Length: 476
Image (tube, rainbow, N blue to C red; front, side, top):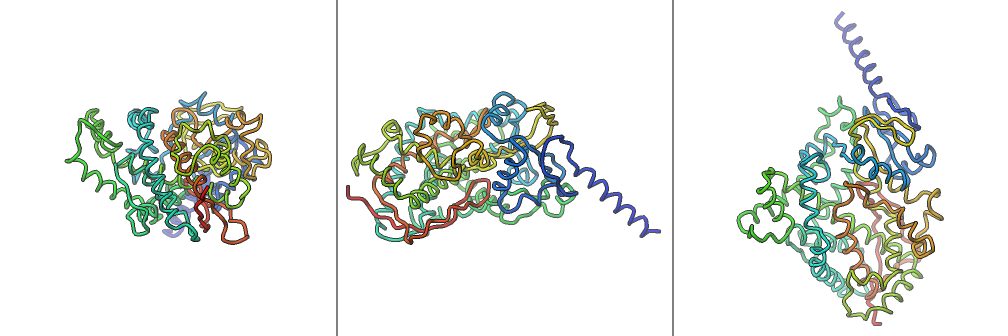
């Protein structure tokens, strides 16, 4: 009798799980399997899966992540409509249990409501046009240090990823903590870079325990790499915070962390929110800009004719030793187009950060209930043959044609509405200055005739394969 009761209980429990895993959405999308929904269909490269599903099911389609209904939005007009016309519904963040276990919703990316508005305002206050103009001096210094490193190894065949990441990391460290590390493979920055990489590779994945409640108690500490990398970064930031708290001049904060310490105290916000907020700025600022640089160099290696044309434009406007400022953008339309095309072909956050609907809404003819997870298919939008001519080709001239203004408006990497990327102006400034200096002062060549592998790795940020290149300093 006991075994019969146990068997019936298991059957009933499984039946309930299956019922709960059925989608309530009447929106096109592939059928899932009981309990898991479509989670197992995402594969190792969900960004590529989402592109295929978008081309099959349309610009609004649905998936089921375990027990969570999910809607995926593609194409610029659809995305803008959601986040600019209906921002009150689509802007809130979907907070997964694994994220709450680390940040406790005290960071910028995963918080909502008044706390998020306040912290967002504080961070944005340090990223105004006037403050970024002052900060440009430090970006110039950092870009010159990277150029000096490349000059010292000129003629050698090198793997540039680590040092391009050091450039981005150092800019964020300067902005956030007033810190800087040398361009040295033994530098502490190498450990920070590794932890940021591990964190972003794992945090972008859909952990089944976040979407299937019964699994959470058994896997709440998995994957280990995600929690270890977060804790390592958090402990590093806590050590910086501890050094600062009793030493800095609170009447004259000189970086973001100091600004937040003073403001949190003045506003009565918990000081426990300072480190998670700084961690968000650190990881987002370091990883996204660095991969844009890595992809840019990769395409220049594969397209030496484009690199030559870019150098010609830079050489016509700047001498080898001349400083290049962000305000010089009007002199470099081809460089601007090269950077914009990198942002299109290799969007830094391929699926963005998940959102959740705050209430029921009818959107594009579909009823989307409250508490539906919403993903933005940036990668699919930027590589869609419905939107772009030859979408898989690196083609900067698409941003120089009579359609350039229209094409610019189709770029979605920084988001729209109140949840757009708070640091996008800093990222654009960093990228422009260092790209201009690198391709004015150096020529980069493939060590072999074969093209560099342009396939991508999925994470919260889009990753590139390792490659090597020969770095040669220019004399004219």
